[in-house]
Image 1 (cartoon, rainbow, N blue to C red):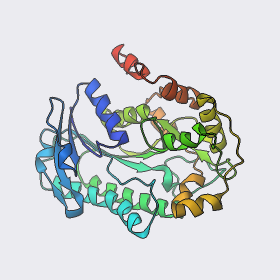
Image 2 (cartoon, helix red, strand yellow; image 1 turned 60 degrees about the horizontal axis):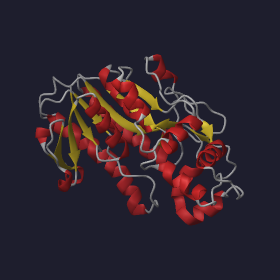
Image 3 (cartoon, rainbow, N blue to C red; image 1 turned 90 degrees about the horizontal axis):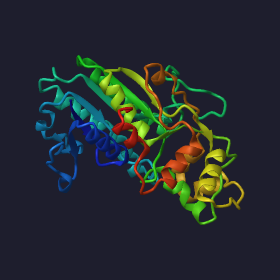
Image 4 (tube, helix red, strand yellow; image 1 turned 45 degrees about the vertical axis):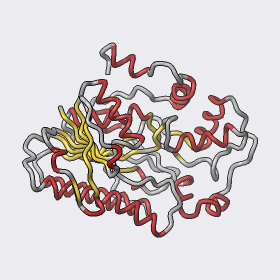
Length: 319
């Protein structure tokens, strides 16, 4: 197997590279930064610039699967200009890939998997969303994800299976939302947001990387939620972070207006509530290694410097 990955230098992409290396899978990756081009035994970088539709077609040589993770972070202030960046970074990358793949022989490709996001689901404290839910959240993020998935759907014209993985809150101590949530807790300023009742559908970063590879290896198609089986409320998550870090929660819940003043429209993601099901991918046979939020946080924060649990599982033939 040889996999082409976009967004390989990001948080999830880095974990996916690590997993591919452990499984001796050759990786080609696309990057917009020429200084990040490498040519190693198991991975090789290729330059592209989706803003101008530029791509090195050599990246497809021998590739049997494509995993698209490209997209600008949503964790920055949503100015009018940056909202444009968020949207275009997702749509342009897919359009560039589609155009390039339309001009080459793709008969060896057996899987195309793209990231998406659970932000497509309407915010709700009571709904329990599966992949068949037809609605779209009435927000900037909901609109972006809907357009993102439409761009993925264009690949259905090829003969290979096409899948979308709607990613939830990624649990990693190396980046993403968790370190930002843990930072105020460490300095005795941690608190839940708003009512604290909003649902947070989370997934351990290693399980997410494994899920992408599972979709590829089994040639799955359609939409799958990239979340773990046990969503928690914001209050529960903050309390568990404080417990693992052995810090008290001294402050009252932070009101929505305060965060909107500080972060602008981007603050929406702190108060949105999506309780999302992982049942569909589990019914395909995928098994999560990290299902409990408390044990996941302990694994991330208390096992620092130790051998990763999943590395041990892999070496003993369980992954």
